[in-house]
Image 1 (tube, each protein chain N blue to C red):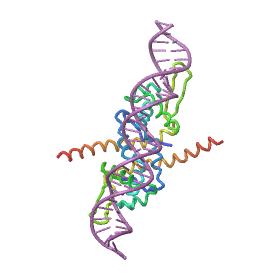
Image 2: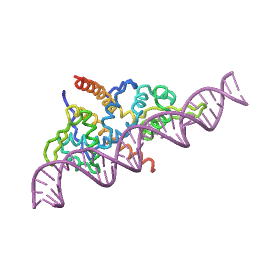
Image 3: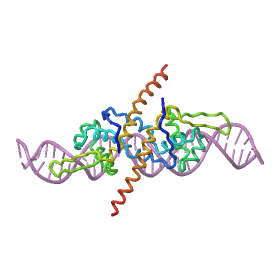
Image 4: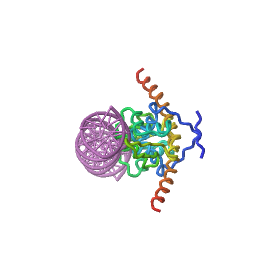
Length: 121
Length: 121
DNA sequence: CTCCTTGGTATCCTTTTGCATACTATACCA
DNA sequence: TGGTATAGTATGCAAAAGGATACCAAGGAG
């Protein structure tokens, strides 16, 4: 396996946390992936799409992403209310991170399975 | 700016969390970067290198990384004790993630500065 | 006149993280 | 005989994150 990337980050100056802090939150990755994959979504669409999430948590996670300019919230003044969420251009710059992490996550799954096998031999 | 990476993850099958959960922890990124940059390190070297970390937290974070096979712990039975930590081969597969996140984090810093400027005009 | 819908809030509670402080074992050194 | 060094553990507490439940506003449908 070839390791092309040279990592030379001065640990004390590391900005990994900045990206991390935006992605951390029980529902944020899945929300982002929905918006990236399916484009603009209404609040209720997201809620229906994400099993197990409560209204409060959905609101909460969306607000936090909005504050970081990762997603955009548009309110239509109609009754019943219509609120649409979408990824911002800036937010879509997170895609490489999500992609890299997802790929790694799939390998990690295999790794854990192998370890489990070994432990049961 | 070119966007080469095509992200097509089924949100409900996303494995982003797997990578995320390993990196999350107040001191994990910096510990990993130290081990990657400087190679094998003693407990006390890490403690001295990372300002503000307590002994308990360092132990705790190292244990969690060890459980995931990201780092290796070697104890030399001498007095006073000598314990060395190093990145495993598997652990070093996290480098691309750390690298991507760090790069994004640096851009994020600029983004926040611009936003701050705008708000004060 | 009442119910339904959407996109929320408000309140309270539990779980998870993180932190501070104190304590330990062992051998060496003066 | 007492102090030092290393790499921890034990205990208790504080803060943050996450979750369950109830409530709300406004207009349209019946």
